[in-house]
Amino acid sequence: MLHIPSAVRDFGRIFSREGYELYIVGGAVRDALLGKKVEDYDFATSATPSEVTDLFQRVIPTGLQHGTVTVLFGNHSFEVTTYRVDGSYSDHRRPDTITFTRSLEEDLARRDLTINAIALNPETGDVVDPLGGRKDLKDRVIRTVGSGDDRFREDALRMVRAVRFAATLDFTLLPDVARAISRHAPLLGQVSQERIARELEKLMQARRPSGGWRLFRETGLLAQFLPELEEDRDSPWPVFEHLLSSCDCAPSDPPQLRWAALFHDIGKPRCGATDERGLHFHGHDQVSATMAEEILLRLRFPKERIRSVAHLVRHHMFGYSPEWSDAAVRRFISRVGQEEAFLLTALRRADICGKTGSPPILPDLDELEGRIRGILHQGQPLTRKDLAINGKDLMSRIGIPPGPALGIVLEELLETILDDPERNTPETLLEIARAVYQARFHPSREERPPEEAPRDTSPGA
Ligand code: ATP
Ligand code: MG
Image (spheres, protein in one colour):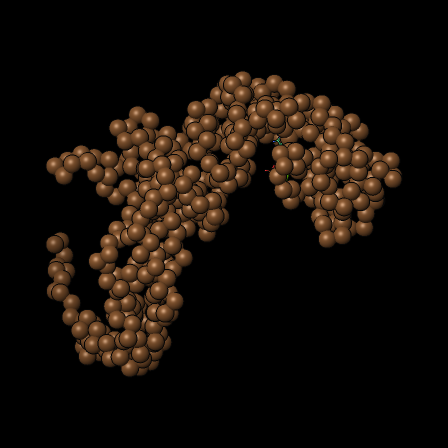
């Protein structure tokens, strides 16, 4: 019998004592039957939301319009949804109306995939599986509840979910389901970018996301939500498969790495050119970074994620060689950021693994990582914030006015300490700042207005 935590069993008992049914449903049952660890329990009940609310002291009406409440039970929070049947779906994403029902079978029949339509009684351990979900789990196939055409027409997001589950579970999408997706792919345009993005995030946690991305392309879904990944189709520079294998090779954590791997060369088809220097993809790092930014913005990813992915893509072409001086390594860290420096080496490994198909042995990259760690460990100054003096000091001690001059002098000081960290003392930096300011801005002439070039102001000129 499947393991059911005692709190979940106790929770079920409270419902049954009052004559209601309560079942564990959805991902928890699927994952438990697959022998995976279950963290999140979702429940379905014959009780209406107000009946559930009457049973407990702490209930949050999280999604009353769908019949969902969250019950705070001990230190758990359980989502409980009343059995329901969905009305018609005129917008291809949500039912126009929902109706509560006392029938578990009816509730299971409105779900997307057979493997997601199995119910488990937390008290008795009985499994209710009218749609054959267990067999499909055993056969490792993705099948819709009822006709794929109907299911996908009702809610077009289910197409993305079917692909997502195929990839994360490493299951086969049944050919009928794949064909139904191909027929209905254009309906995805009606689904919000946020819902698509949430599924993509889960896909990227798969052991190998490539399977999902390939299915997206084959079924025509990709053209709907990420046409940029289709641009290599008629191009002499196909990058899709390289992007996919790089993505598989990248660690799934932190999540921006896989996104950066997926996009790092996406601009190559736009940049490829052959001239007297031979074939090159000049500027593809910048173009790819801009495309990544646009794509993730469109998919409404959080700002921080977009910034991070674009940054990694933009800098992915860094060239390291053991001849680099320590100052060069410091400049690299200063330019890309401390954490990002390691993400960039991880991205480089994924990129090379994406070409060869196996995790590469790269002594140079190991060495670079070691040198970065050494520099960080010694606490060497790397950014403007680490300077022994700041902008205020420059204004008060040297009289540099606020404005661009200040920024330029600070930048010079940063260059100085990156070259030689020993010079990061207030005295030395003030001296250098004074000299730089004198040389670049001639402050002795500051009192007089700068001489202007004579201008021709004669009328009619
Ligand atoms: P995960 O482990 O990714 O959370 P899950 O199966 O729990 O997987 P949820 O999105 O949390 O996925 O949905 C919970 C359950 O609700 C699903 O198992 C499925 O039965 C049902 N469901 C979710 N989305 C849909 C949908 N768009 N159409 C029909 N049923 C759905
Ligand atoms: Mg879930």
